Length: 395
Ligand SMILES: [Zn+2]
Image 1 (cartoon, protein in one colour):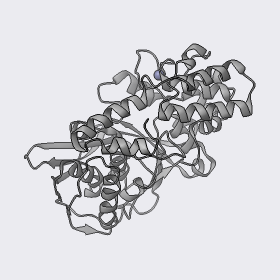
Image 2 (cartoon, rainbow, N blue to C red):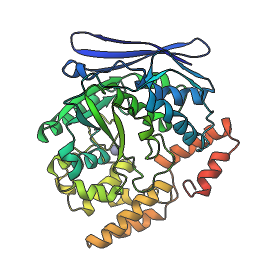
Image 3 (cartoon, rainbow, N blue to C red):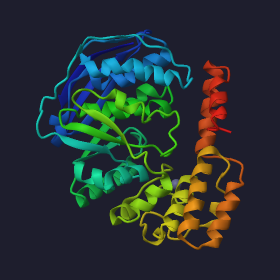
Image 4 (cartoon, rainbow, N blue to C red):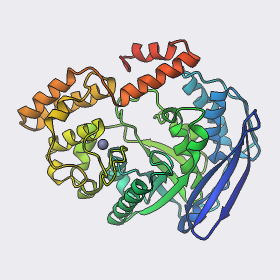
């Protein structure tokens, strides 16, 4: 695989950085990252932006990686460590030989750079933004179209962007809106679950002339990091001399994060956890993720004032949550412990206990399991599945 022809251009609204990815088969795909004109001067023309995604894709395809332009020396030295870490997760990845020359990168604007945090409007984003040490430090929120909100979801994108703008305004932060087509490149080759960390690094590094550090809010597993595309041991390895990638928020579990953000009206006004994209609904209020978020908001005593969710918790829906699946089991057990500590709601307690007895039927773990089973049969003869099962990550 080659990465070449890195270009910067602009039109009347946006500034773009692009790079061509060329596979051994000679198929060429162009990755585009754009930012609104106001932050055009943040955009960097560096091959280091594209190296993380290139390493993961080349590793997946079993190809060498040739990079035409200079990349960050720090990043190039860390790339084999990142590659080996992901290989240790038994995803069927190969060792990648990266052919590139490196430099110690210096930002074009060395002074007055800001500190960014990725912001989707979810629990992890709000926690990383609102905790005291970060709130003072963070100057810019980075809102991305093309990760979870794909290009075609206009209505959801506009609503989520409007709310991200409102959050930025209330907290006196700048909002950078980045759009990218990266999934057009990655989805046909490798699961988003495993490459999204490299894609987050790509977007963060594309802004390296304007940001000296960017926080990646920890994934749902919080204090239980498992092999995943964004991981505390992996994300920092994509840093350059110029911009560091900082995995943040693994110090609290989801129920604790919700308890923390429940003290902030801005979170209660704009929290978004759902990707169901039900027309006219910011959160559907009915999927597993919405329901368990509502459970935690109820435990924190703020469900009635959480504007973006139904006011009343449907206990029948709580009882149906697939409490025996790995992730649901962690969340619901934590919720139950928190409920017993904080409140006296025996109906919710009974509903949670009933849910914890449910076999997994759908939702995140089922999807992960189906994905891993497919991947496993393709590459591994069941090794990864057995590894995750051994670690009690999947049952
Ligand atoms: Zn939902």
